[in-house]
Length: 76
Ligand SMILES: [Zn+2]
Image 1: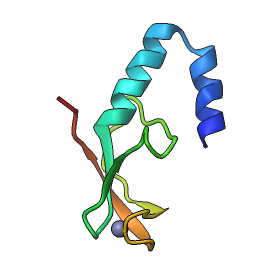
Image 2: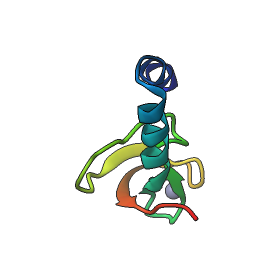
Image 3: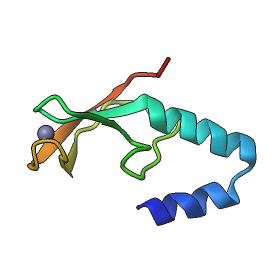
């Protein structure tokens, strides 16, 4: 997933890449146990997206495969 992201970031203009990183860091994924990560942290990109889909991911905190909640939470 990280490799695909690197490929995308390599071909888009610098301004778009920065915008993609900003958005991907603001989109958070929260496990039912409360552990939260951003799309960026898991090696993904979420850009110009709407809605709050659920994602099935392995949580590093509780170690379970759980449905994570997607929500917008900009930093700083
Ligand atoms: Zn968890």
